[in-house]
Image 1 (cartoon, one colour):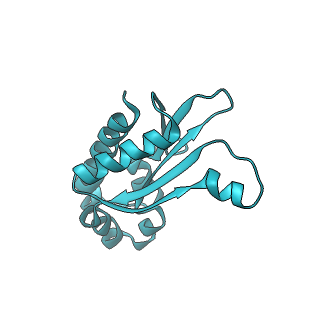
Image 2 (cartoon, rainbow, N blue to C red):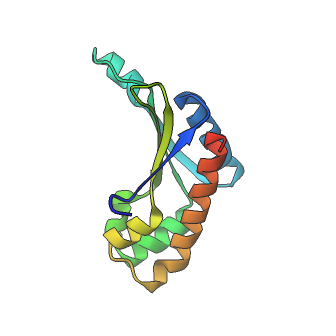
Image 3 (cartoon, rainbow, N blue to C red):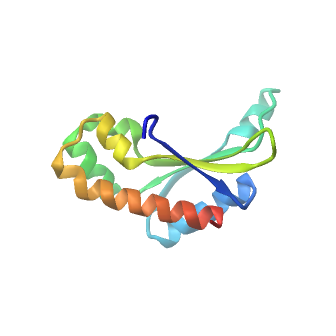
Length: 132
């Protein structure tokens, strides 16, 4: 994956997609660190922005394994998912591919199992959140 991004279509609104993502994260026993409504923040400064919401989440055990391997991995952790509406009203969910994070930070074999768990986890959460 050249840019490290995975983008899938959602059958829900951006807000409902992030709501469903948060629900799935909590049910999976993971931690939701924060949620950011970029469109609401844009309105506060008088700028337009189509619906755009971010959730930061993860499993501190898996993330710590990556940072023990290479601390710079902390730049891309916790994991993030962004729900956004395009100019045609279509809603998408985009997240970083964990394997790309591994390549970006030149993680070695010690992180392999954690990256596989992260990829499996985030792709499952994304399918639940988008209804696909």
